[in-house]
Length: 273
Image 1: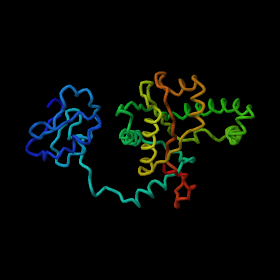
Image 2: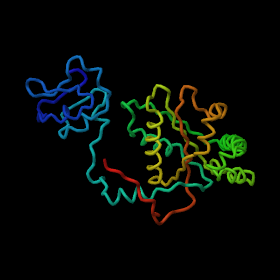
Image 3: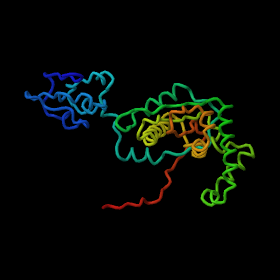
Image 4: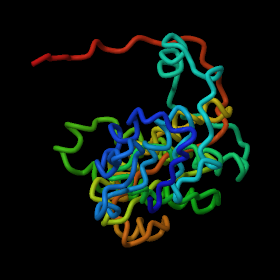
């Protein structure tokens, strides 16, 4: 049986695990019990579908133990209406309380984000957390220095007219880059992550959506991302490993405002072919 063990007394021989295996490495044996096809063991990328789809708990994967795979609790399932409000009520936070975010909360967010899908279940996303106020201010300042040069280009101004305002706000004493957020979280992925930017974006989205449920707010740091893409020195200063070409930063902190409505958005452009 190899890395899969089947409890013959529980297995109903319905073949759910065979059908749902993305690597198509599981087959039904002659006596109707699922087994790994000989020679196909390396095709398993530990996605856990076989463990998750068995309604009886008859299948055990040695690298995905059932003890670490809790059952889905029906009482925690949310309705379509609840899910829609949850998604619609998410806001970008640009004003934070002058309050540090506990390390335990940050780690809880990151642990939640690790359940985001990754290409081939590679799970190669890495996390960098910056909470030193002096360092955060320096990161913002270096980004503004880059913006000062950028706004000298008329083409840049034509497409991004808000950039001079960001520089002016900084000169007036307001952190227009990181918004005085107490924490900066940067998700990164190494070059061997063939879908690295998508992987880390999905992970950040999980992080971003979980934050409000923990009383926290986030904002994707687009100005800083632009500077990181153009300034290798800033990337090194921020602490992003040289081997990780994929990266995106997000601000984190306790919001200083509460929102009560869900503003409408533009109608989507949809084509069915």
